Picture 1: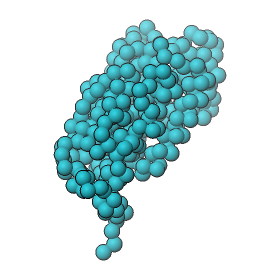
Picture 2 (picture 1 turned 180 degrees about the vertical axis):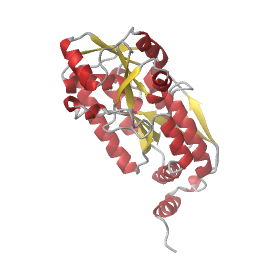
Picture 3 (picture 1 turned 90 degrees about the horizontal axis):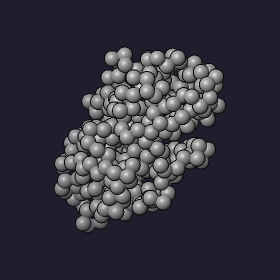
Picture 4 (picture 1 turned 30 degrees about the vertical axis):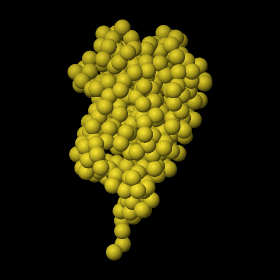
Length: 323
């Protein structure tokens, strides 16, 4: 009987496993989230953990380890035993951007210390503005910013994260000057945008949705190259001729310590691929503002390399450094 590609991979993985790991997984798996409970990464982790339990036939528990822009949790996984029982749901920040911005503070090297398992979801941000802001779309924003150089401010949840890079990339592509206003978390920045304290913000769709639906902010665009399936009425920044090359999303991926045997990594990749085919999980990820995007391990490695190159150009051009 001909085996499916997935079952062939699993069979090969089983043969390659060392003796101590032939029965993997045999106990509870911990999925580390390097941010506080209740945020975007945490929500995705809990959705994924629920489906991984079914694929791996073992409990998968989420462990929140926030701090240092995600670096504490990521470092804990990088230093954990490579036995497949400690995993990371990492975002673009702590696995690709932070080494470019927080060079002196890094206690791990993502490329050497973490094994990419699969991309889980791509998460475009949305650009929202206060109700009284003169621009109704990106074209008008560009015109207004050119007429008022340095007077337009945008809020993000911190320095050197994807939202910050969203703003710097927009300024670069459009040839405008924008003022970055970093906040700690999304809630306060949305309140201040709604009240006109700051003009705009780059935030997750999940965080902004209540403000958008309640008419407290107006949404200008999404940061992906094309419109998102979960919000098809919101134009992409790239639809405006002046910013046609624009594209920058956040993303969440599954990682293991680099010392994890290749066969266990393959087992995890196959389990995650199964989970990400689940219609309920797809629906719930889109409700969180994400696009499910499973990949092979090599595809994920290539993706990270391409994204890191993009981030490096923005960080260098904008001279982004820690606060």
